[in-house]
Length: 214
Image: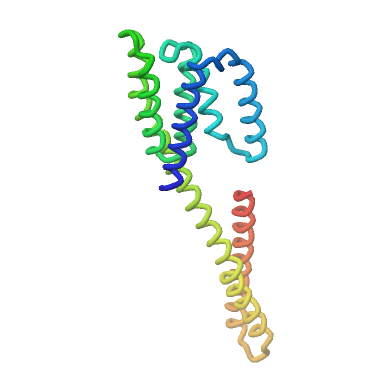
């Protein structure tokens, strides 16, 4: 929970900073700022193999605030930002950040027309929330499935194969005894053959599961 609060706080700070910079004299260096933060974003992404939302939030918000905020032709980038956050964090983070954006973007509300994109955030947020929930649920199910497959592999390798091998070995020992009747020998052979088939099947199953996990 503390991690998500920290994430929300950092996203809020990045968005507020983007707003402050967009209305300050520094905004005349917009191309340079966008280029600098884009390079930082690219370097961190390549190193960590994960998109740094803080820098992405700044870039998107700075672009939107610098080009008219609610009337910006780049306003649609806010939607993509919300969905990216929804894929990486719990729905509560997406909802909280949407409310922060509504407050910040509300500062540029100056006409009924500009109210439309602001209200659109209220509609896109539940959708991002739903998508985020589905994505996280799929991740949990995948994790559970992977855990179950690992447990199955351990059982097959440690217990099942040991038991089947013991049955095969014991059958071979019993079949070598001369006092056995032909009927008993035939029954033991059936048991041994069945055990071998089970062992082969378990080895094939183990191989298939291992390949799937790769």
